[in-house]
Amino acid sequence: MTRLSLVIPSAVLALSALPDPAAAHTFGAAGAGLAEGFFHPLGGWDHLLAMLAVGVWASQLGGRAVCAAPASFVGGLLLGAVLGMAGVELVAVEAGILASLVIVGLLIALAVRLPLPAGLGLVALFGLVHGHAHGTELPQTAAPALYALGFVTASTLLHLVGVAIGTAAGRYALPLLPRLGGGAVAAAGLVGLLLG
Image (cartoon, rainbow, N blue to C red):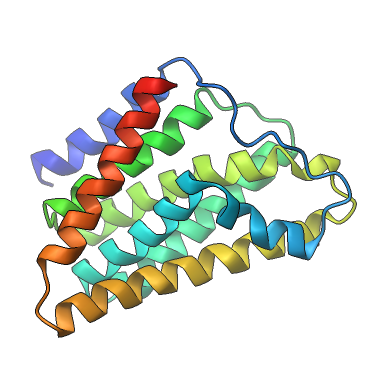
């Protein structure tokens, strides 16, 4: 196991201890169903960037990671949603979401290749905090299963768009493009943490 694969999860845990910034995902979902669930990840810049970034990083890793990384994120997303729906509190969810942007952005910008199990675990952890933000709204909804299906579908599609972006950059010999994008994602997360 590389030193980096130990440092990154430690950084996520340390960042999760930061005070929670103003909750950006508490707009409520009263009466929500499939459509509202689908549009929720599209309406939050942090969710949108994270899902695209996971797809881009998966394409950088290549091989089994192309499918496994997005699947791990979605698995974590569902677990986090169930925890949020059950009223299980996690500390610093918003900080964890922003930290996920910083870390996955840096992984892309630096073209870091973690061992597959470490990468999948990290991505699942990111999915957990993102899912918890979604799940805390589910008890208010009229159709929680449809709402969950909506945000899982949108998240999966965003991952696929990220994979397509990363794959296209590789195919057309533009390796700098995803790396610059990763740097921008990391910067956005850092600014969010600092302003939060």
